[in-house]
Length: 460
Image (cartoon, rainbow, N blue to C red; front, side, top):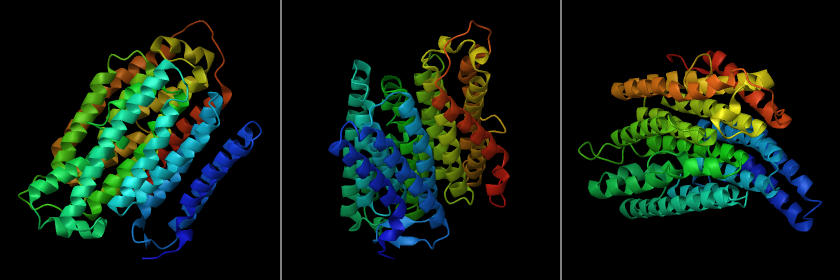
């Protein structure tokens, strides 16, 4: 255990970039606006570099409540890498400079979620990762944006209260809020109370993950918020949510219940099946591409739950961490195409291959990647996740997930097929957003092809 503030250098870079950007707007509302994106981008770049350096530093717990280990470092790096292109998309979409500050603060909350080793830190991180997002969803200041922000806030506030209730119950039952001391203490208390506390605790985490039953906000925010904001809130907060679930599963959930009590793995397995199935079925008849992507992200949350269920299988942790990176680049690439074209309906993409062949190929790579087509990154992530859950003794869950993957191909093809149909020419895509889409699609292919390097021995 250490108390060195330099161990939190990536988080300090994120905070510094956001605070300096906010000060620039406060001191000089007009002149400072052009500096905000650079200050936030520098903060994110500093977070990324210091996260890479931290990989080679000894891990441990700082300030008795914040854990420095591979999941924390991976989320630090992926959150920074995912937020940087969102700043580009925000600029391409003409968003107000406050959006960059809000994104940096949300990224800070996401990273803190991943490193939280104490329930009280988890609650603070949940709020930091949520409140700026509510403001982001309403930045368009129109009716649909206001409705999206209101739904996002109401669902987040309600499930956040449930999570706080769960934290209170767990503290009252165990007498501690630190993860290392929770498991053993909870075995000696009434198991019905433990089950109620864990269900309440999971509520807010599922909201951040976009999983059932906290998924209601996702389609409305994806459609009503600016496209750059939709890309951000359906990508970055998920990173911290799943890392937080992984940490719970590794540190205190296995020892928190007696064998006769309800199985938390079975609970999460049921949530996983409900999430991936609901997301896939709801996406079938969508004609708005943003809502289609929203339900796609919900289904992906179901697949991302598989490695959590698989703990303590040896492949569980690497499967989740790799899948998070693969999901981030793929989802950002698909939304970058939406920003670049400015089209929100499937019909609007008819003939895109004639107007911009490279953008059409980038979209096809991202959508086929979501469907689990090799050699994309999400394909490899799914293979690792299915293998991990099979190793963990949930073969039936791996079969259900594989069937859902096959089913999902239908609605991704509904978008891809019109793209390659001949049609009259149209507007030229927004250049910065198009470049982001190209980079994301390339990263998806590179991660998928070179994935053998990062796979642990004994992997698939």
